[in-house]
Amino acid sequence: MNKLKVFYKNEDFKFGFFIISIYLFWALFWTFYILLYKGTLNNPYFPLPDMQFELIPPFKNKFLFGTDIHGRSVAEIISMGLIYSIGMAMVISLCSATIGVFMGHLSVTGSRMIKSFCEIFTNVVFTFPSILIAIIIMSFFGSSILGLIIALVFSGWAAYARIARGEIKRILGLPYVEAAKALGMSNRQIFFSSVLPGIFPQLLVHMVLGASGVIISESALGFLGLGGSQYSWGGLLATAKTVLLEAPYLSILISLSMAGLIIGLNLLGDGLRDILDPHSKK
Amino acid sequence: MASFTRKIIKIILTVFLALSFIFAGIRLAPGDPVEKILGPEASNEEIFNYKHQLGLDVPIHTQYFNYLTNFLTGNLGDSIFKKTNVLELIKSAFFPTLFLSFTSIFISSLLGIFGGVLSAVNKGQFIDKGLRLASLIGLSFPIFSVAPILVIIFSLKLNLLPVSEWGGIKHIILPVMSLVIPLSAIIMRVTRNKFLEDKNAPWIIVLKAKGLNGLSIIYRITKVILPTVFNVIAIQLSVVLAGTMITETIFDIPGMGSLLFEGIQNRDYPLVQGVIIYVSLVYLMVYFLVDFINEKIDPRIVE
Image (cartoon, rainbow over all chains, first blue to last red):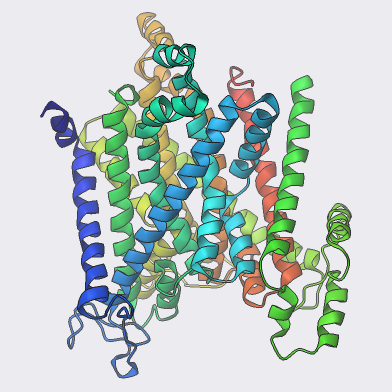
C-alpha cells in the first residue's frame, strides 16, 4: 500500500496519468468503434468525405466539432490521428529502446573494437540532426508507415543507447552483479537477470518522454507532407493551415488535441522520474 | 594541443559519416528516383539521358567518389526544376534561415535561463508554479501548431501583424515568436532542474558559510550550469533548424526550408541533397563550437 502512496502523492504523475488514461480510453474506444461497431475487422470504417458538408463550423448540423475541407467530421479525423499517433509512438519507442539498449550493452561489454565502434556510431547518429535523417529517408522512401518507422527509429535509438550505456556501466559495477559474474554467469544471463530489470525504470521514463518527442517529429514530417498516413496530425494541420482564414477552428482543435497528449506524456514522464529516481530531486 | 587535434579528427569523421549517411539514404531508398521523377510514361532513352545528366549511370563506388569530390570542390550540381546551380540557390536562401534560427535561439536562451533561474529560486511558490505551467504548455505546442494559433490571434483577430512574406521587422515577429515559445520552454525546464540539482553542492555551502549574499551565489550557480544548458541548446539545434524550415513554409519566408520543401515536392534530387548537406554542415559546426565554448566556461569539462 505504501508503494502506491508514492504514486498517488506525486502531482505530476497524478495529472499525467489522468490525462493519458483519457487519451488511451478515447483511442481504445475509437479502435473498437471503427473495427467492430461501424466497420468490421477486415473492412474498418474510415471517416467519409462528403463535399456537401464542407467546412461546417463546430456545433452546427450533426457535427459536434465541425468538418474539414473534405467534409469529414473533425472529431473523427482527429480520432483517427490519435490512434495513428499513439500506435506510431509505441512502435517507434519500443524499437528505438530495444536497439538502443542492445547497442548500449555492446558498447560496455563488447571487445575493444566493438566498443569504440559502437561509441563512435552512437555519437555520430546522436550528433546528426535527427529530423534531417528522417526527412532524407522519408523524401526518398515516399510517404509510407514503414518508411516513417524506419526513419524515426534510425534517428531515435542513439539517445536510448547513450542512456543505456551509462546505466549499464553503473549496474555492472554493483556488488551483486559482480558476485553473479564471479559465480560464472554468462553475459547474457546477467543481462536478463540484472541489467534489464536495473535499467528498466530509467528506460521507462525516457520512453514516456520520448513518446512525446516521437509524436512531435511524426507530426513535423506529416506537416512537410512526409507523413505515413493522411490522418497524421501534422498533415491535418498542414491542410488546416490552407483554410486558416475560413476555418480557424480546424487548426485550434487539432493543436489542442495534440498539445493535450504531449502535456500528459510530459507530466507522466516527469512524475515517473521523480518517483523512480529518488536522488534526482528534493 | 592533443585534444584539439582529436577534436578536429572527430569533426572530420562526423562530417564524413554524415555525408555518407546522406549518400546512402538517398541511394538505398527503394525504387528508382529517376523513374519516379519522370513518371511511368518516360521512354528508356529519356531515363538514360537523365541518369547520365545526374551522374547516376556509373557504378556506385564511382558515384560515391564523385559525390565526395564534388562536395570538396563545392559543386553541388544544378537544380532539376529551377535549372540553376544549387549552390547559388542555397546562398540566396541561407540568410533568412540563419537569421531566424539565431535570433530565436538568442531570445529563447535569455528568456529560458532567466525564467528557469527565477523559478528555481522561488521553488514551490506561486511564481515557480506559474512558470512551470507556462513552460509545460509552451513545450506542448510544437512550432507548426503554435504558428497557426499565433496567426489566428495576432493577424486575423487583432489584425496587428502581417501573415506572410519577408521584409520588415513586423514580418519577423510571428515566425520568431513561434520558434521562441517551444524552445524557451525547454531551456527553462532544463535550467530549473539543473539549478535545483546544483543548489546544495558542497562548494555552494562553502560560499554561504563565507557569507556571500544571495545574488552573487545565484550568479555563480548560473555560470556553472550554463554548459549543461548550452548542451541542451546544441541538442535542440536540430529541432530549431527543422522548426525554422517549417516556420518558413508557414510564413512564406524564402529560406532553406522553403527551398527544401519545394525540392521535396518536385522530387528535385540535387536540390534536396544540397540543402540537407549544407544544413547538416552548419549544424555540426555550431555543435562543435558549443562544445568548445563549454570547455572555456567550465574547464572541468575535458574528456
